[in-house]
Image (tube, rainbow, N blue to C red; front, side, top):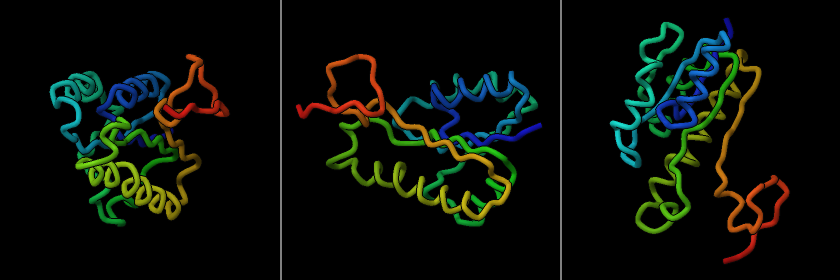
Length: 151
């Protein structure tokens, strides 16, 4: 049975992806640090079905604060990594929240990528993003090569 690590597994996308992968015969290791950006009740709701499944393991961990050895030990357990963990929202990426944004989006990603680069077991690293990277665009159907309009 292939093993997949999903960071941000308590979020909407991460939890739904985990459910689908388990239905498809995968074992999922989920990591989440349960930031207060979204309600902890909502995150718990997202995880309820997963926690009852024997093909799911939850690790409560802030990737940005994890040691290299902690991350490497986790990553060595899996063949695939889907990185969904992030501090969402463009508006919260500046000002007083900038530190949180950098910690959860840049530092966490950098540490995870370094751990993956040392783990010979990982076949694929999938890094997810959001529509925020496109900025303001007129077309609802976005493509990766779409040009953004400055507001």
